[in-house]
Image 1 (cartoon, rainbow, N blue to C red):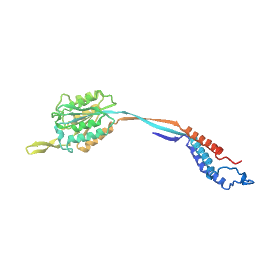
Image 2 (image 1 turned 90 degrees about the vertical axis):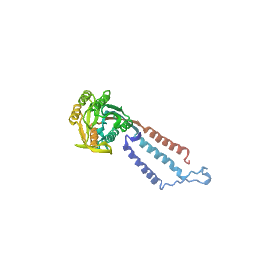
Image 3 (image 1 turned 180 degrees about the horizontal axis):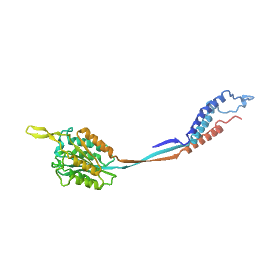
Image 4 (image 1 turned 180 degrees about the vertical axis):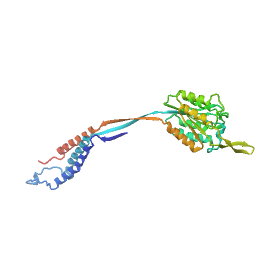
Length: 329
């Protein structure tokens, strides 16, 4: 985008001289009377009459020349600004528990849907970061590898359902697969957000072992334990339809804290939709992308054009007086 500014703007105050010159010219011409004596009308030169107002045209040319000269002295400069930005992004893998216990109704409408909705909000708020999604139950599965195509990632998030994997809770497998997806990343910061509501009871990799792998490669793990304190309503199929029974909430918090602390991350406990959203906001503030912005300013001098215009009107005044307003002898 091009703009205009003046290197010597103080000269622009001289433009106030223009109305003063006009006032001076009016005062000077106020009582002036042109009287030429001829012995007879026959000796008057036969010239075409010139309108009275045309005698002011040279003054207009002169004032324009002065105005353009003043602008040229103020040194007008056009300039444009360009910005280039470089982003030191963060690669984030979300590892989501999809075991049957995620159907508990201590969240609205249930744990899995709340986790999906708030997770999508988190994704939408980080457009400069590559993100991916792993789900796990009795085994782990990569729904979406690291990508900047957040629309595709959100579609995969929406497609997550409870019947995609056999039931179980393989926390170690879910963490290990997410870590594996980050091993070839060259990002400045690599992070796993692991969300689970249970105790590891499946899979061939122990959660602590997966955490040690993450620590070795400098990958931080944030663990979110999801579930209210005490018991939670859980849907159970009965001959009379689905009924809700209070089921004890069991989260291996001791192990989850050890996993997070080993990797330099943190453990959080979400007991409802609001606290889950606040946890994502805190993680968002802890893991901020670094953006460097370089600004370039291009200037060019424009006084020459105004100087040429000033000279043009000076010449125009001279020519007008010489060839159009020729004085009588």
